[in-house]
Image (cartoon, rainbow, N blue to C red; front, side, top):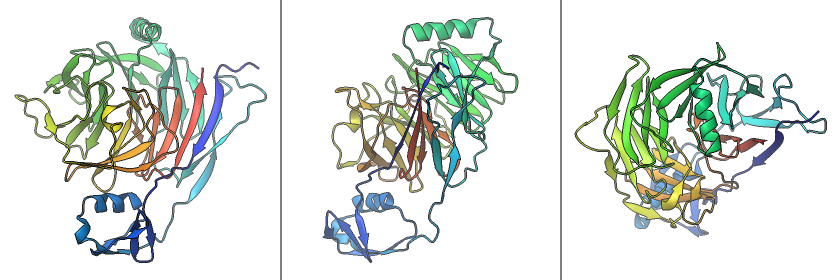
Length: 383
């Protein structure tokens, strides 16, 4: 049998390069700190400790009382395989397994992406990939746009939600309905958001900026209406985006937006002003790579820090292995560790549950991360 796709599987263990806790003392660069005022950390989270220390004056540091967690993450193995009903596998292909920390409590059933003109579906319950041959209910508009994007090597904006998979191309939002196996038109947008951002917050889809475009808009899934939003200060190209507690949307860096962070208060929108520019108060252990990053991943951790990793420096085209933390309280940016692999991410991540994230990269790799970034596995489908 001839395989349509080659299958590769990689597993990584992150190297956080964090400080070491020995007994009741915290060691930084092999030097015992002094004067930490009896802070009780109840989670085994070196990242949170380091972020705390980076935002604490050295003279105020004494000791740290450290409580080790009683329950460590348990790992369970699951088989990951390809459905031979929808794609063929060569006879000598090794079927790999993937390991997840804890059993997922996710309500997601499927993760979708596009490879060329093919719709790829990963079934989370059955742990298999399918190529979907779907019905086109757009009178050929979707097929025409997909062909145009493929020929010109453009990337549609993709958004996985629990029930629907959205595809943004040109000035149209398409959606795939799994129950009817069909692609449909949701709405026409006000502007073209090529290389912008696409995110869902509660019952609204937010379409943000893009190439030579600062316009933003939202589509209400309740009223089925489009509404304009305040413009960004700069065209945001492959920036990082993060939903902060359904109250703010933050944009980080992006191509030609070095050292730039801005946010929109979506609970109290001021339509007379642009997005609020956020100044970085302090940079701790930062080199120039982070301010030139694009196509990276961001998410909010449990300690009010936006974690930034992956992506590429658009000046020197070097992939980033650093992990950065942006503290939302004091607006400081810190280097907090490293990860053993790097990639350029094209989709908004999927939060499968409280601890596991998933995202596709631009080379068709499906990544699974834990929130602590101590677990990272990739399953690749290569053309």
